[in-house]
Image (cartoon, rainbow, N blue to C red; front, side):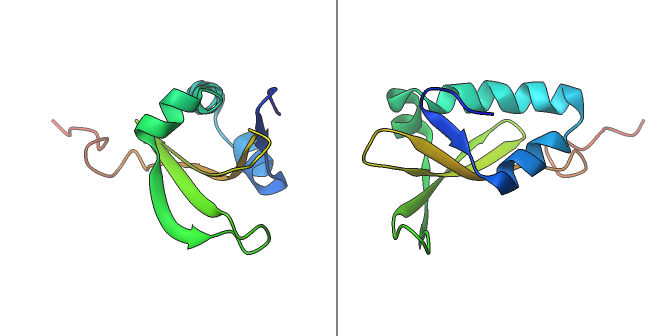
Length: 98
């Protein structure tokens, strides 16, 4: 589960494997965008803490229901440490009961 530039941690791979196929497709779209430096620069949030092993800042992207945290390394690679989906029962994704 990697591209030329984006690598997933073992934890993120496990999280990805547990997704419903439709949700996995949505997450793949976001992961493919992470390889684009301009996209990351315009859309990333600083989580205000450093990775305990590399001492690098941890960033996040939130796109639609997808949350991804990642590190940017000097060699240009992006290391995804965590991914998740925002619950469909939270606003604005909560279904409208009629």
